[in-house]
Image (tube, rainbow, N blue to C red; front, side, top):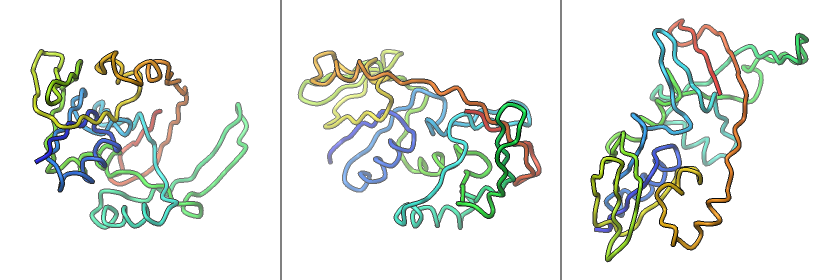
Length: 205
């Protein structure tokens, strides 16, 4: 059976794994301590911080149909809050999201969605890939020196700046990828609401 290595376990990597899992033997590699990538959640005491995606929308029918089972299972829930937008100390917009386009969040945190998608998959967490090379098949090396052999394909789903850490410089598009810059967006959104378990949910991005 074809063996495929996927580097990165955000929604992209996990989605690719689900598309291919019935056709190939899939192994995923994640440098962090858990799956989810840009939908990660950090915890501090009784608080948790969705420091990537705050919520998502479903505007296409195919995606809307995809999330319906997750809503039924309680993995996703519509996020109905009273929204206020400030310009300086002036309120310039007010909305009740229950009357607006639906926004969805993972329950109880955004990383629940990725954790659900990762169930049943072969995932190596806390495994930073630092090099890949090909002889007859592909070989991956992690930060500790551990080798992972005999892959027919390697798929990278991580940001360009991270991919250049392990892609061989002989890769045809290496220089192009190296020149891609990921610009940070400095945006802090504090949201206080009564939610699923009467906890404080503080969203940061």
